[in-house]
Length: 113
Length: 116
Image 1 (cartoon, rainbow over the protein chains, first blue to last red):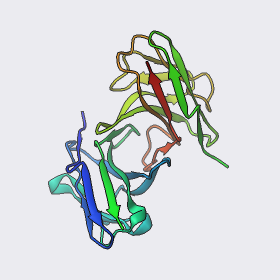
Image 2: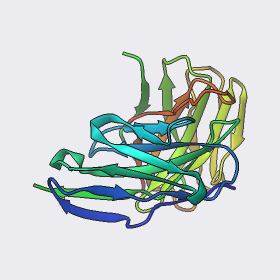
Image 3: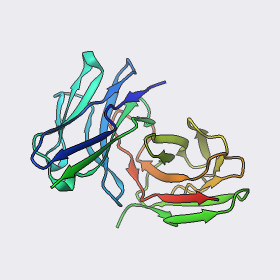
Image 4: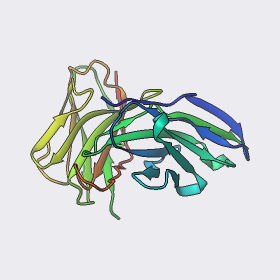
Protein backbone atom coordinates (compact mmCIF):
# COMPACT_ATOMS: atom_id res chain seq x y z
CA UNK A 1 0.00 0.00 0.00
CA UNK A 2 1.08 3.53 -0.63
CA UNK A 3 2.19 5.67 2.26
CA UNK A 4 2.85 9.38 2.34
CA UNK A 5 5.07 11.13 4.86
CA UNK A 6 4.89 14.77 5.76
CA UNK A 7 7.29 16.06 8.37
CA UNK A 8 7.11 18.98 10.79
CA UNK A 9 3.39 18.86 11.39
CA UNK A 10 3.33 22.35 12.90
CA UNK A 11 5.15 25.19 11.14
CA UNK A 12 5.15 28.77 12.40
CA UNK A 13 6.78 31.52 10.40
CA UNK A 14 6.63 35.24 9.82
CA UNK A 15 5.27 37.00 6.77
CA UNK A 16 7.75 37.22 3.89
CA UNK A 17 9.61 34.13 5.09
CA UNK A 18 10.08 31.25 2.70
CA UNK A 19 8.14 28.04 3.15
CA UNK A 20 9.09 24.51 2.20
CA UNK A 21 7.02 21.50 3.15
CA UNK A 22 8.39 18.05 2.55
CA UNK A 23 6.45 15.12 1.11
CA UNK A 24 7.80 11.62 0.56
CA UNK A 25 5.89 8.61 -0.70
CA UNK A 26 6.54 4.91 -0.78
CA UNK A 27 4.99 3.71 -4.04
CA UNK A 28 7.51 2.68 -6.68
CA UNK A 29 5.37 2.74 -9.80
CA UNK A 30 3.97 5.60 -11.83
CA UNK A 31 2.31 8.12 -9.58
CA UNK A 32 0.37 11.31 -9.77
CA UNK A 33 1.01 13.79 -6.98
CA UNK A 34 -1.10 16.49 -5.41
CA UNK A 35 -0.96 19.17 -2.81
CA UNK A 36 -4.25 20.21 -1.23
CA UNK A 37 -4.84 23.14 1.11
CA UNK A 38 -7.49 23.62 3.75
CA UNK A 39 -7.90 27.24 4.83
CA UNK A 40 -9.68 27.81 8.15
CA UNK A 41 -13.38 27.16 7.70
CA UNK A 42 -13.07 26.36 4.01
CA UNK A 43 -13.23 23.33 1.75
CA UNK A 44 -10.17 21.29 0.99
CA UNK A 45 -9.00 22.58 -2.38
CA UNK A 46 -6.34 21.69 -4.90
CA UNK A 47 -3.16 23.74 -4.77
CA UNK A 48 -1.30 21.98 -7.58
CA UNK A 49 -0.79 18.60 -9.18
CA UNK A 50 1.86 16.69 -11.11
CA UNK A 51 1.20 13.99 -13.68
CA UNK A 52 4.04 14.11 -16.19
CA UNK A 53 6.51 16.38 -17.93
CA UNK A 54 8.28 19.24 -16.21
CA UNK A 55 8.95 18.13 -12.63
CA UNK A 56 8.58 21.70 -11.41
CA UNK A 57 4.89 22.42 -11.09
CA UNK A 58 3.36 25.81 -10.44
CA UNK A 59 0.08 26.16 -8.62
CA UNK A 60 -2.22 28.82 -7.30
CA UNK A 61 -1.23 31.66 -4.99
CA UNK A 62 2.47 31.51 -5.85
CA UNK A 63 3.05 27.92 -4.71
CA UNK A 64 5.23 25.48 -6.59
CA UNK A 65 6.34 21.91 -6.06
CA UNK A 66 9.17 19.83 -7.41
CA UNK A 67 8.90 16.13 -8.19
CA UNK A 68 12.18 14.30 -7.62
CA UNK A 69 11.58 10.74 -8.72
CA UNK A 70 14.87 9.38 -7.36
CA UNK A 71 13.99 10.68 -3.92
CA UNK A 72 10.27 9.79 -4.06
CA UNK A 73 9.61 13.37 -3.06
CA UNK A 74 7.22 16.17 -4.00
CA UNK A 75 8.12 19.14 -1.83
CA UNK A 76 6.00 22.27 -1.76
CA UNK A 77 7.56 25.73 -1.74
CA UNK A 78 6.61 29.37 -1.60
CA UNK A 79 9.31 32.04 -1.63
CA UNK A 80 7.46 34.60 0.47
CA UNK A 81 4.42 33.70 2.55
CA UNK A 82 1.55 35.92 3.56
CA UNK A 83 -0.72 35.83 6.58
CA UNK A 84 -3.44 34.45 4.29
CA UNK A 85 -1.35 31.32 3.71
CA UNK A 86 -2.23 30.15 7.22
CA UNK A 87 -3.80 26.78 6.54
CA UNK A 88 -3.33 23.05 6.67
CA UNK A 89 -1.50 21.52 3.72
CA UNK A 90 -1.86 17.92 2.61
CA UNK A 91 0.24 15.95 0.18
CA UNK A 92 -1.54 13.13 -1.68
CA UNK A 93 -0.40 10.38 -3.99
CA UNK A 94 -2.37 8.43 -6.57
CA UNK A 95 -1.03 5.36 -8.30
CA UNK A 96 -1.57 5.18 -12.04
CA UNK A 97 -4.80 3.51 -13.03
CA UNK A 98 -7.12 4.53 -10.24
CA UNK A 99 -8.22 7.61 -8.41
CA UNK A 100 -7.72 6.35 -4.89
CA UNK A 101 -5.62 8.92 -3.02
CA UNK A 102 -3.27 8.29 -0.12
CA UNK A 103 -2.87 11.39 2.04
CA UNK A 104 -0.11 12.48 4.34
CA UNK A 105 -0.93 13.63 7.84
CA UNK A 106 -0.74 17.28 6.90
CA UNK A 107 1.26 20.35 7.85
CA UNK A 108 -0.42 23.00 9.97
CA UNK A 109 1.15 26.28 8.85
CA UNK A 110 0.67 29.48 10.81
CA UNK A 111 1.96 32.75 9.35
CA UNK A 112 2.42 35.53 11.83
CA UNK A 113 1.82 39.05 10.48
CA UNK B 1 -23.22 26.50 -8.85
CA UNK B 2 -21.68 23.08 -9.30
CA UNK B 3 -20.27 21.41 -6.28
CA UNK B 4 -20.58 19.01 -3.40
CA UNK B 5 -22.91 19.60 -0.51
CA UNK B 6 -22.75 17.90 2.84
CA UNK B 7 -25.34 18.30 5.50
CA UNK B 8 -25.55 19.10 8.26
CA UNK B 9 -22.37 21.00 9.07
CA UNK B 10 -22.50 19.93 12.72
CA UNK B 11 -24.16 16.79 14.05
CA UNK B 12 -24.53 15.58 17.60
CA UNK B 13 -25.58 12.08 18.60
CA UNK B 14 -25.75 9.91 21.64
CA UNK B 15 -23.56 6.85 21.85
CA UNK B 16 -25.29 3.75 20.52
CA UNK B 17 -27.26 5.55 17.81
CA UNK B 18 -26.68 5.16 14.11
CA UNK B 19 -26.37 8.39 12.16
CA UNK B 20 -26.39 9.08 8.43
CA UNK B 21 -24.33 11.82 6.82
CA UNK B 22 -25.49 13.24 3.54
CA UNK B 23 -23.35 13.90 0.47
CA UNK B 24 -24.73 15.20 -2.82
CA UNK B 25 -22.86 16.31 -5.93
CA UNK B 26 -24.09 17.96 -9.10
CA UNK B 27 -20.80 17.69 -10.97
CA UNK B 28 -21.90 14.56 -12.86
CA UNK B 29 -18.92 12.71 -11.41
CA UNK B 30 -18.83 8.92 -11.49
CA UNK B 31 -16.64 8.34 -8.46
CA UNK B 32 -17.36 9.38 -4.88
CA UNK B 33 -15.43 8.97 -1.66
CA UNK B 34 -15.79 9.30 2.10
CA UNK B 35 -12.88 10.30 4.28
CA UNK B 36 -12.44 10.78 7.96
CA UNK B 37 -10.17 13.60 9.17
CA UNK B 38 -8.75 13.56 12.68
CA UNK B 39 -6.21 16.10 14.02
CA UNK B 40 -2.70 15.08 13.06
CA UNK B 41 -3.94 12.03 11.12
CA UNK B 42 -4.58 13.45 7.69
CA UNK B 43 -7.44 12.02 5.65
CA UNK B 44 -8.24 8.33 5.82
CA UNK B 45 -10.45 6.64 3.25
CA UNK B 46 -13.59 4.99 4.61
CA UNK B 47 -15.48 3.90 1.48
CA UNK B 48 -15.45 4.73 -2.19
CA UNK B 49 -17.73 4.16 -5.12
CA UNK B 50 -16.72 4.01 -8.76
CA UNK B 51 -20.19 3.82 -10.18
CA UNK B 52 -23.82 3.63 -9.16
CA UNK B 53 -24.76 0.51 -7.18
CA UNK B 54 -21.13 -0.33 -6.51
CA UNK B 55 -18.83 0.55 -3.62
CA UNK B 56 -15.70 -0.76 -1.93
CA UNK B 57 -14.19 -0.56 1.51
CA UNK B 58 -11.36 1.83 2.10
CA UNK B 59 -8.75 1.64 4.83
CA UNK B 60 -11.03 2.16 7.83
CA UNK B 61 -14.46 0.80 6.84
CA UNK B 62 -15.27 -0.98 10.09
CA UNK B 63 -18.33 0.52 11.77
CA UNK B 64 -19.46 2.37 8.64
CA UNK B 65 -21.82 1.60 5.78
CA UNK B 66 -22.69 3.34 2.51
CA UNK B 67 -25.07 3.13 -0.41
CA UNK B 68 -24.89 4.46 -3.95
CA UNK B 69 -28.38 4.25 -5.43
CA UNK B 70 -28.03 7.47 -7.42
CA UNK B 71 -25.06 8.96 -9.20
CA UNK B 72 -25.32 12.22 -7.31
CA UNK B 73 -25.73 10.80 -3.81
CA UNK B 74 -23.41 8.80 -1.54
CA UNK B 75 -24.69 8.77 2.06
CA UNK B 76 -22.53 7.44 4.88
CA UNK B 77 -23.97 5.75 7.95
CA UNK B 78 -21.91 5.76 11.10
CA UNK B 79 -23.12 2.78 13.08
CA UNK B 80 -22.98 2.10 16.78
CA UNK B 81 -20.19 -0.39 16.04
CA UNK B 82 -17.78 2.43 15.19
CA UNK B 83 -15.66 2.76 18.33
CA UNK B 84 -14.49 6.34 17.87
CA UNK B 85 -17.09 8.07 15.70
CA UNK B 86 -16.38 11.65 16.75
CA UNK B 87 -14.53 13.18 13.80
CA UNK B 88 -14.73 15.46 10.79
CA UNK B 89 -16.13 13.63 7.76
CA UNK B 90 -15.33 14.72 4.22
CA UNK B 91 -17.03 13.63 1.04
CA UNK B 92 -15.31 13.93 -2.33
CA UNK B 93 -15.96 13.13 -5.96
CA UNK B 94 -13.96 12.80 -9.14
CA UNK B 95 -14.94 12.47 -12.82
CA UNK B 96 -13.68 8.94 -13.29
CA UNK B 97 -12.13 6.08 -11.41
CA UNK B 98 -9.53 4.81 -13.79
CA UNK B 99 -8.16 7.07 -16.43
CA UNK B 100 -5.05 8.22 -18.14
CA UNK B 101 -6.00 11.71 -17.10
CA UNK B 102 -5.15 13.11 -13.75
CA UNK B 103 -8.53 13.57 -12.20
CA UNK B 104 -8.32 15.46 -8.97
CA UNK B 105 -10.86 14.93 -6.26
CA UNK B 106 -13.26 17.71 -5.33
CA UNK B 107 -14.23 18.01 -1.70
CA UNK B 108 -17.34 19.04 0.14
CA UNK B 109 -17.37 21.32 3.21
CA UNK B 110 -17.49 18.43 5.66
CA UNK B 111 -19.66 17.36 8.57
CA UNK B 112 -18.36 17.49 12.11
CA UNK B 113 -19.89 14.62 14.07
CA UNK B 114 -19.79 14.58 17.85
CA UNK B 115 -20.93 11.49 19.70
CA UNK B 116 -21.33 11.63 23.46
